[in-house]
Each structure stands twice: as C-alpha cells, then as structure tokens.
Amino acid sequence: MSFVTISPVIKKILLIASFWFLVTGLFTPTTHAQDAEGDEFATSYDVIYDVTEDGSTLVTEKISLKNLTSESYADQFRLIIGATQISDIKASDEGGTMETSSKTEDSSTTIDVKFNQQVAGLGKSLNWTLQFRSKDFAEKIGKVWEVRAPKISSNKNLEKYNLTISVPQSFGDPTLITPIPKTQTSSNGRMFLVFEKNQITQAGVSASFGQNQLFDFDLSYHLENTNLVPILTNIALPPDSAFQDVIYQRLEPKPINVTLDDDGNYLAWYRLTRGQKLDIKLIGSAKLYTNSKVKNPVLSEELRKKYTQSDKYWEKDNPLILERVKEVLGDDASLDSTEKARKIFLYVVGALKYDSSRLTDNIERFGAVTALNNPKSAVCMEFTDLFIAMARSAGIPARELDGYAYTANTKLRPVSLSKDVLHAWPEYWDEKKGWVMVDPTWENTTGGVDYFSKLDLNHFVFTIKGSSSSSPAPAGSYKNLGQNGHDVKVTLSDVDFLGKPQLDINVDTKEPIYAGLPGRIKVTITNLGNAVYPSANISISASKLLIQNADSIISGPIPPFGKAEFEFSIGTKSLFDSYNDQIEVSIGDQKFSKDVVIKPFIIFQTAPLIGFSIIGAGIGIYFITFGAFLYRKRFAKKK
Picture 1 (cartoon, rainbow, N blue to C red):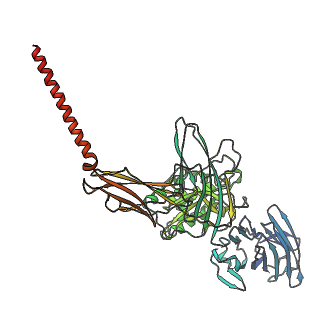
Picture 2 (cartoon, rainbow, N blue to C red):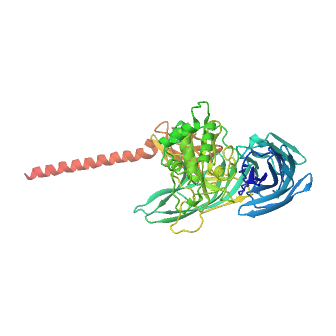
Picture 3 (cartoon, rainbow, N blue to C red):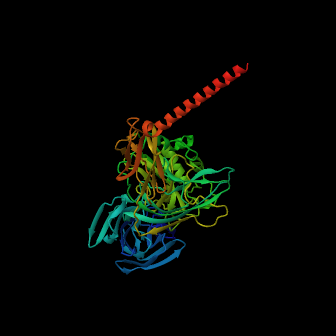
C-alpha cells in the first residue's frame, strides 16, 4: 500500500492507505486499498471502532510497519477516507505526537501523517497509532441502528488485520451481523464484535440493531382511459410479503375490488368511462423485518415453472446467457441453490458497471442480454434482469422487486427507475429459507458491502414481478402528461401500527325459500379493515336447510378494500317443509348469521294458485266449447 518516488540514492516510500469508507444514508462503508509499487513494506493493523450513544465513532488504528528491503525508506503515510465528517485527528509513536494534516474534497477526506523517524533498513519496524472521530460510520435510521465497516480489498504484504467493533448495549440486540464475528462478548454496558482478516476480505462488516423498520407512505396514481369504450383497469398497491406488512389508512376513491394475483400483488380495480381521468390517493404504513415471517416456505410446481421461464427482459435460454451460466457454475453438481445464486450474484456484481449518465426521465430498459453486451452502461434494472435471467437459466426460481429504497447518498446507493426514488432488486427461491432478497446494484456501487447474505431494512416493496418482467407497474409510474410533482412520499416513522382486518359478510338468497325447488345462496366477504385478512377456512351451516358443496372452502387472502364471493346450492328434504331457519357462516374465529324462512311449494303458496288456474282454464274451455256448439247449432237451423 505504497507509492514510490525515486531519489538518486535510495527509494523514498510514501505509504498511501486508501481505506474508502464509502458512506451512504445508513453508513455503508467499503475499502479500496491501493497497492504499493513493489514489496517494500509489510503492515499489520489492530483497528477499533468505538461507537458512542449518539452514533459518533472513535476510530483507533494501531499500525505496525516493517521494512522488507535495505533500499527503501518511508517517512510519511496517507489515509484516504470516503467520508466528510472527520475530526479530532491524532497520530503518535513512541517518540510522541506525529504531525498530521487533512483535506476534505468532494466526498472524501485525505489524512497525511509525517513520521518522527524514517523507517529505513531491512527488518526495521515502526509501531504507531492513528486516531480520528467520525459521524459517518453509525447512524440511527428510524428504529434501527446501522453500523458498517469496510472490507479489505488488497492483502498484499498485509500480515494481520484485526477489527473490533464496540457498540453500546442500549442499541439493543443485534438482528443482523455479517459476517458472523469470531467472538461476541459484552461487558460494562458495551458489546464487542471481533473479526479477523480472512473474514473481511470478501465483504465488509454489516451490523444492524433493531427488529424492524417503519415507514409511512403517501402514494398517488393517475389513470386515463384513451379508448373509445369504457375499460376495467387496475393499479398495484404495496403488498404484504415475507419481509413486510402493510396497512392502508386511506384509499380514495374506493375501488370496485382489490384482488391478489399469483405473485402476491394487491390489485385495486377501477372502471373508467371513455376519456375519463382518475387520480387515486393511497395513504398507509409499512413494517419491514430482517427475518422472513414465513416459517415453512413452499413454492408450488406451477409457480416454480413460471419463475424459471424465459420472458422479454429475462432471456434465460439465450446462448449468451447459457454460456455465462456454464462459466460461472461449472460442472459442480454438489452446489445447492444458495451457492449457485451466490456465484451468479458475484458474477453480476463484477461484470457490470453502474452508469449514472443513463438516469433520465425516459430511461430505456436493456434486459439481460443487452446488459451483457453493454456491461459498462448498467443501472439497477440491468443488474436485476441479468441476475434473474442467469438464475432462471440455472433452474433457480427468481423474480423482480420494485419499490422504494431509503438512501441518503445516491452516488453510492443509487436508485434508477424515476425521480420518485424507485429502485429495482431481485430475489431468488431458497429451498430452506423461501424467498431471499439481494441487491447486486448496491454491492457494486458500494465497492463490496455485502448485500447477498442479508438485505437491510431499507428496501420497501411496491410490486412483485415474477409472472411477467413488464408488469405490474409500481407506484410512481402512473404519471400525468406534463406532471412535475412527486407521486411517492415515504418517510421513516417511530410509531408502530396495528394492522387489523375487519370483515363484513353478506348472505344473499331469494326469500322466502320454497321447499322442493333448487336454490342458491351467495356469500360475499368484504374486508373493511386496514390490513390483509389471511387465508382461512369457510364453513356454512343451517339447522334444517340442506347446504351442498360447503366442504373444504378456503377464502384465500383478502386485501383491504377487497372482497371474495362464494356460491352454495341449497335444498330441503321434502316438498312440504315449512319452518324458520338460520344460515351461519364462519371464517376463522368470526361468525355471521342470517335468518331465513322456508315455505312449502305445493300447499301454502303455489298449490291454490295452480288449482285456481286449472279451474279457470277448465271453465274457459267449457265456455269456448259450449259457445262453439251453440254457434254450429244456430248455423245448422238457418240451412
């Protein structure tokens, strides 16, 4: 990690450690260590990140520098940090304080340290300490503390690198630590996480403290019917998923219905007349989780087939895709879905380069094959499409997630789909874990922060694309022509919410019910609450009335403002039944009832009418016959 300048007699080494703590809104650092020109020095590091209650971090680096040649010497050191909130810089060795200077430019800070003595001579060593304070390495976002440390991107002559992260126990229990620390201990109100060099050469350390994250959202949708006839159309609302719950506080105007598609999207349906424009407002909240809510994940064969098929932007059968998958995975038959997905993920991260110049209002989506042919011009869509296409080609079910991604630094953690900070990232199916979200874009743009092992609490899903690579469109995509405002407003929240479905059941049947005649009843279940009602068994019964096809009925999930309808056949035991009954509908732990009246078909209602009709018809026939007889008789007399 040095830069070499040549003097007439001896080489003078300016050691440059380029530890790029690339900081985003959640502090997501990474390291790009700049190699030395030659093998003149070996280094060892003992680094401590001491995080305080307010998130300020005291960084202490104990550095050992050993000269490996007799022809070079070093008298200064430079540290380049991708952060701007650096203060209290100090350096010292056994001889006392060392001279330091710093300069902040753009998004980085350079620290120069002048040694008190030259490190000259074969085997000569210098042990010294660098210390500084930063507000960039830990931050509380909503209900979650995020702490991250960089990876080591170069091992050249790096003999040792030990990292200790110390955080207050008041941050709470860690819900995510990647990689797993060598040791984890607690004492005197602090938690200590210790990592070794081989643990942070592939990715940095990511630690989260907090069980969940809360967001409030205010979304606008704009629909227009340009057809000459009325249409029935829909918008996609943020869904519940394995990693998030949503509640809807307001949806105006009310939809005809809200249904659930195969991918898990909530679709709100509206009918538009010819030329009609409709503005829709959705207000609600979301709770995001670090761990999946699904305990025993299952993927049906029908969906497994659908999530491994080719599509417009996921050309999984293209020869170029097939060739790359073979290169990445080789012939190792022992790899499970997770290891295959990891290899594909790392390939995508390394193969593509993020191109911010493509971020325009009318950004073009390339798809997987075009992304491979233009690897230096990718945005989040290309990272996502390429991962999905390669995963599907390898037989791994995969799909796309579109939504809001919290980021305070779009250079390091960019969003690409629109000015409404929309982002795209993929997820793949793990046979044990179920759906697993990953973000190859952000691992690429942050230089190696781990976004595969566990995703953070900043990815809020608006839509799931699995059956199609093109639809449904997420909130923020339903624009008015010429519109300049933002349709997506998402803010962090500290207030927890209570999702509560509220069911209303309507039993519709003709009254009275006539005995002996076949009949039907329609049961409509409407969710008037703010959260989805989970799938549940439906039972319908009556004391005497016979109800057919009422066994093994399952409601399926019913989204807020959504409804489900079921029809049942009914009958009686005889034509002469006459009684009052009660139809009872049970769903989950809720029961609803309706009183009905059953009347006989023959005796009390229709029999008299039929009798009178027969008598009337007989009398009519009699008079017609009698009249005809008289007419013929009179006509005969005239002759």
